[in-house]
Image (tube, rainbow, N blue to C red):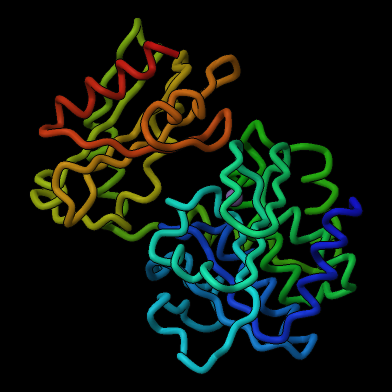
Length: 321
Ligand SMILES: [Mn+2]
């Protein structure tokens, strides 16, 4: 572990009351990091709360030993002296948790491209596949690898690598996972819960996604766009559609896979998720669409008056890059 991360880890331990923040639409990495960090700090006698802009989906709730708090639910007398954000690339990814950073010491630990230095201390490892890999280093440094911490770190790493399939996987990723497996992590159980078990309505969401696949630029771009009317028509929630981002890029020959979903309750706002093959920088395209992320996986958000307009805007941005 490098000396800068050691310094940050040392500083965290100087605080006794800590709020850990996960990013909006909390995923398996941000949650695993938060709950592993909470476990370690609790074992060191600290008071810790895990907080997020919104609730955790049912699928990922197995990662949380107690429900995540919304920012407004932090007891007014908690008296945190540190806010620690894990896997949160930018202010917009903090959502309503952004206000928690005013008037209190803040540390950001992350692994996304781009440098939104919204905290007092900003630590980013861009080449690291999962934020959980960074928290792994902290756990090792603190000598805090309990069974529970090992389970959570494995889940975070597996989640952000698509079960070790994405191009972000490195030798380090496997070495860290191998150690966690040697400690007895039930990889089969965790990976099943993360990737394989789907509800019937999630299957309906996948069916709709496959049906809506459209191709641009001689089949090099595959796109799916789902608006609120469609969600209503098919009785689908956002959770039912959470696993669809990977589908367009699965088509052979596609270099850029795009999913666009109108935000529930915010008509006219479209969230974009992109996956790309080598040579296509998804984060550069998403930078043009009020977002960012990794080279091969990124996201953004636009306003459009119709589904067609949303598609047109996104394809135009992709064309520029
Ligand atoms: Mn992550």
